[in-house]
Every structure is written in C-alpha cells, then in structure tokens.
Length: 613
Image (cartoon, rainbow, N blue to C red):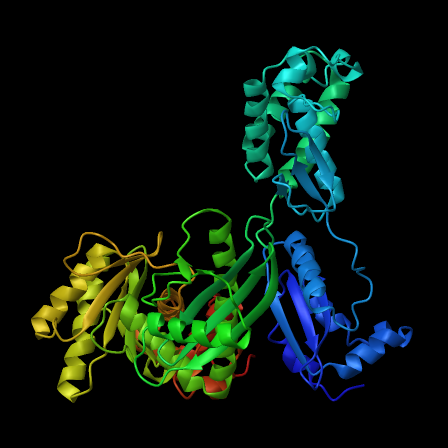
C-alpha cells in the first residue's frame, strides 16, 4: 500500500456526480473515472477487500499521490466528460475504452427532404449532428418517438425538385403503412417537410416540451377510446422521455475551440477555473488559487489568470467565455459573456467548480485558523446588514409569559459570532401587568442598557429583537429615553417569514435562506427563546409549588419561599426528614407539613416529638 493519505483527500471530495483523476508522484495522469457519487467511488478504491483479487487495482492505488476532480450536473454528463478526457490524455490504466469507440450522435442529413438517423462517425459534410448520447436506449427512444410523431422518409433516394417532377420514383410500403407522407411523388411539399425538420431540431436541442405535450395527448385520447395497449405503450415512452436529457452541458458539437474562465474571490484569495473545449469536448480542466497582495478587482485578477493559464496550456483559442466584460485588447481574441444557450451552460459548469473549490479551500484554512472563519462571517454580516462596524458583540431579546402570568425577558449575548453564556441575563418583569409583550420588551431593553451605561460597559454593535415591528418600536422607545438610539444598530426578526425590520423602514429585508448571516441571527433568536422559556418554566413551576405550599395551615408566603429556596422542589420537601425540615420550620409547621403530604388531616394525629398512648 502507498503512503498516500487518502482519508484526508476524501474529506475534500463531495457526494456529487463528476469525473475524478489520479496522478502519480511524477505528476502524470494515470487514471480517469466517472462517478455518480465522487466520494463513495474514490473511497472504494482504498478498501482492502476490493483490491485483494485485482492486481491492476492494487498497482494503481499504490501509485496514487494526488486526486483531482471536476463536478458535473448528472451521471450522464460524467460519462461524456470521462470519454472526452480519456480520448485526450489516454491514461495508462484506462484500457477499457477503445480508441475506435465513441458515443452515438443523431444526424440530420444535409439534403433535400433530410433523413434522420444515428451514427458513430462525425463527418464534416454540412449535416447537423446532435449529441453525443450517453444512453443508446434513450437515443433510440427519442428517434422512435420522432418518427411516430413526424412521418419522415427513411429511403436514400436522391430526391430533388426535378426528379420528383419527372416521376422517377414511386411510394413504398412505408407510405402505405403511414410512416411516410410520400415526398417522392410530391404527396408532401418540401416546405411542409422542412417545417417538421425544424420542430425536430428544437426537440433534439433539448426543447422537448412540445413532444411531451403531444405524447400526453396521445395517452389521453387512447384511454378515452379504450385503446389501453397504445396508451400503455406511450405511457412508458413518456416516463423515459421525462427523465431524458437530449443534450449534455458537457459536450456540444457546435462549440469547436473555446476557453472558459470563471472566478470567485473574497478579501484574501481568488480562485479561477479553466475549461478547455476542443472539437465539442472538454479536454482540460484546472482551478488555480491566487493570493491577493493589494485590493485587486476580479477583472484584474481574471485578466492575469487568463494570460498565465493560456500560456501554460499553449491555448490558441480565438474565443474565450468569461463571466463579465474585460478590458483586454487583443484583435485575435473574442471575449464572450453568454446570456443564454450552451455557452452559458458551460460557464455555469465552470462557476460551479470554482465555487466548490473555493468553499473547500476556505474550509481547510479555517480549520487551521478558526479566527479566519470568524472574521469572514462578521464581515459578511456587516455587509448584509449594512452595519458601520463589525458586529463582534450582539445581543438578542425575547419575551415569555403564560396567559399573562409569570412574564419574563431573556437576553443572550454572542461575541465573535459565538454564544457567550456567562453574559446571558434574564429579567423578572416589574412594571407590566397582564399580557403586554410590547411593554415587557420596553422594560427589559431599558433596564439592560441603563445598567450598562451606569457601569460604563461598552454597548453592543448590534441588537436583535425577536418579534415584528411592534416589539422593535418598543425597544427603540427605551433606547431613545437613554439617548443611545443612534449609537447601536437595532433590527427585529419576524418568526414566520424570517423578515428583518429596521426602525422606521416599512419594508422588510430578506436574506438568502442559506446565508451565514441569517443562520447566525436564527441561532441568536433560537438561543434567546430557549433561554427565556427555561427561565419562564422555572418561574412558573415555582409559582405553582409556592401556591401549593401556601395552602398548608401555618405556612405563609415568606415560609413557602424559604422552603423552595432551601430545598429547590416540593419533591425534596416531601422526602425531607424532620431534622432537615427543622432548618427552616418550627415543630408545629413540620407537623402540619407532614400531615398535608401524608394525607392525614384527622385531629388525632400526634404532634411531633410526642409518643402515642
């Protein structure tokens, strides 16, 4: 076995479809493979049981020193990319794919009344080639469906206007059974035939909505006519067709020699992905990392990367696909920012890879330097929430009550985007009667920051109020009384739609559901709710127990409070010995307490310390 640390490499490989590449110690590409789940497939090579009976696999694994991969959308795309990369690089251990084998294409022949059929050979004869198709079964399904939907000729007669007019040909059996409309005898005009061909091109280019609609109509009509055999046949084809991808984002015969670049960056690093497209296939993929020295823009960094990468790969492509306009001046190169179509899909594929690469690299850096993650999150929060400074100190308020009783307020504190539990506080509401959430919030905020001002404590950079506009307005009332409404940023978060409200702004702010800023705010809100509910329940339970103790003759409000403070719960009071109770109660109170819990309220019960006769 090699000393290669495959476990560390696996941590950086996602559970997604793609193509993986193995490299040896000399930097040679020794194997290319495809996978529906990259991590599972790569990991399977290093399982001892899988290598025991396969000498080739053991030898391959022993030589692996580096693993790279390219993400794609589907397993079909992985097949196609694997095929093109193997053809280009011919790695030593890829021996199963023969040089003379390739995936099939559908050809629309360049001729009068074009024929449509499939082929494995692409010839530059002006015909239209669509594909390639990773699944031969799917390709035949779409061809059969087209032929049944659009009757086309299958003969190789040299049809043209003159030969048809001279009556050189006669219709065949295909016409008789309805598979052809007889253009050879002018039973179908060439414009009508060409119209059908244009519709078929749209279908083969991935616009299969019309076909699916027609098939559904056939199924419906056949069912209404009780032709269940036909309905079943078309229903099966419909199921296959709906899963079918007639065109891959990885390979396209119309794109001959193109470079594709995309970039993703942050304050410290930039990452650039490169795809090389030659004769309709991806032949090279690479993602590089650039450490920023100054405050370079993405335009500047991408321009530098394009020049360097093209030199490294000796690229002579006249066309470069980029995500935005560049100021590079070169008469021999055309820069394209695609908005739609296949080139846009290629750009999206490149962007998907560069974003994943960036995410994985940043995760590695942040594991080694946790402060990097903290700074990144705080910087993102400052940007998303339009703050004037990093929110290193955040406080969040939440209220709890039970039908207006036992109202409490809780405050949780996050420092550097992490809970600071020693700074959590809760408030017993003193000035509010009944269920008044707004007044409760106003009191809690006022008491919190009045005390911080009196003690000279530094105020937080961000205050979050759990609630909508009403609670936010109440909080602002208290801050204005204290004269600090302009010294801190305050936002409210509504529970239902995760809306963020700013004081005086009637329109809410919506953050991406996956954004780290929203996740931190949600964590604050949930933690405040948990902390508040815990304190509220404790207070409510104490109130219920206190009421029960006060019902015992000889034990009043003050004594009940002393008992709960000393024993913490009624259960412990019930189980306490007379000696333990004597720390709080006198002999008469102990006697009445024992009578209450033992259910003995009769007059003959002896007092504590006396012996029955």
